[in-house]
Length: 177
Picture (cartoon, helix red, strand yellow):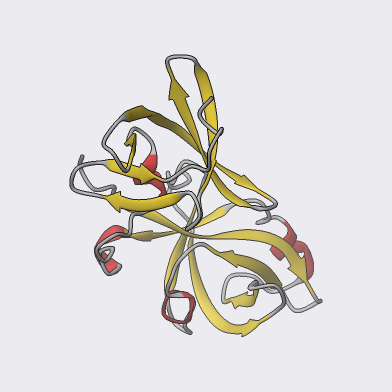
């Protein structure tokens, strides 16, 4: 699998205040680094593709908001109306500017297409999509008998083998029936 040129690092949720702040949902393990003053990010879509002639957004100021969200001021957003035009877009960074994932970690876009197996090695299916649900992320796994939604947490996901493109699950009894 080739590495993408861009990686999604955040989602622009809604304008906040009158001075052009916008609420950002960080989609990164390093929000302090990614959203530091002076960092240049790019606007993109949910697939991780930049918008045409990707607009650059330069972080001016970041502060914690609530529930893990950030209130961010970008140099290019001067008022509430301007910030509101950016809602529901994604923030991208060039992949070359990010630390590669550590052992057992993956980028979300890498999960699609991975094989799902039990701890015994028995094949369960293939990840066809990753969903963002109110309870957290979930993997949509295509099986011969249909699909299975697997919560992306420590209870269900035992191990991720990035090089082998495999997700090892430990489902509770009855989940696969």
